[in-house]
Image 1 (cartoon, one colour):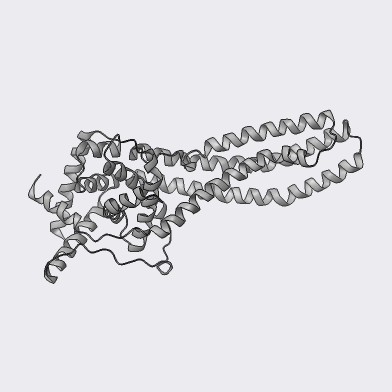
Image 2 (cartoon, chains in turn orange, blue):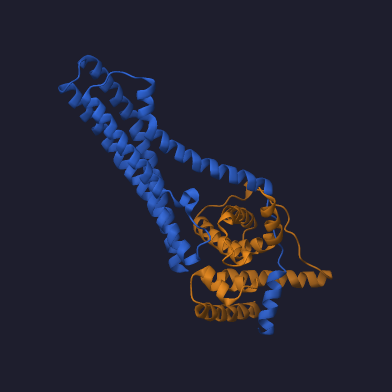
Length: 165
Length: 193
């Protein structure tokens, strides 16, 4: 494992974890998916030619890996007893009341995101990671106009679900 | 960007994150690479087994035996490269950095190719004994000098086929069914999406 990859995981690890959480609600499967995504990123780094930003490239690999993982695990029985995971790294700051409110908002948003169709989910999460329309269009293989339409619909749907929960 | 959207982005970034397990990652990497190389090695060994056997156990062969063996060897080599081509995506030539639309098509293609590999191997399980039977029949009625030795070898070879080939057929059948299931699930998942 080279130091470049360690540095990349240190920088983009949280982003990869958020990709995993948008596809898997179960914590154990999230950890498993995160490992699969990291492995795929490691494997794909040698093919990175700088045609897009590294962040866009990593997100493309991550979403593709998630696509196969989710389809594969959709019908697999899950056994909770076989793995242990470390506690997630908390991003909560402030008073306990604020932390609780923040956790509740995050849980609501994640629940709403996971209800979206896969393509909308992919587009909206990349947008929330700061990617522009053209980058998202490159990742998904659709036009940037389409990205705009899907993103607006998805965000509207998210806001509605978020405020109704 | 509206305030609502800004809030969503902010909330999204506030979620707790899980750490990558580097130790597990190294082990998974090693296992994955080893598995891929073992598959290639098995295919390559099947292709070069015949010349190796001839090299280590040299004996005088009739013209018919020589032509037959080298013909089979040629077919096996072609088969090896065909398998390599079918496995090209799972051997790392698959670009996970393709766009998602392309990637989904490639995953479907890989499942279809895995089904094809398993199916062709099943078919080969039926043709392999036939190849041996033909070989022994031609040798028996052709230019074989020692028919008793040939009969003994034919019995041993057919016994070997009778034991091994049903097992291989069953293994390939299970793989074929597995990949058909995975393909159906994958297609259903993406049709829904």
